View 1 (cartoon, one colour):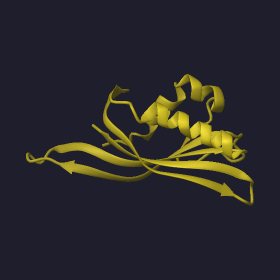
View 2 (cartoon, one colour; view 1 turned 90 degrees about the vertical axis):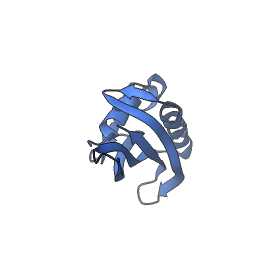
View 3 (cartoon, rainbow, N blue to C red; view 1 turned 180 degrees about the vertical axis):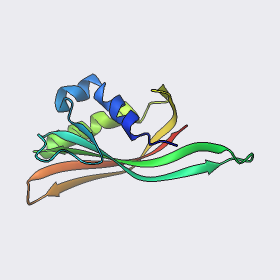
Length: 129
């Protein structure tokens, strides 16, 4: 099954409160070199398929990390809250993928001392078909 990350990116990009903070700076796998802050990076971590009794491919469970990067901790924290507000309660079809659960499983605040960038990394377990 294809990755759900591009669809999640689209879900975040169309969320008005988030768009007000990060604009179109939502990247998949890695940010552009010298990308303006704040921005978001989505990364695929792992994928597992659910076997079915009739040997067909069942729904997927993918682990996706969403890193919210900003020049201050407060901005990174606020962006992370908006990401949670948009994704966690969502159930249904979006761009031909059926999402049955988007569950946050890890939430960590980070600081890169060489660049002075604050970030909040939230990992999700995404169930979809």
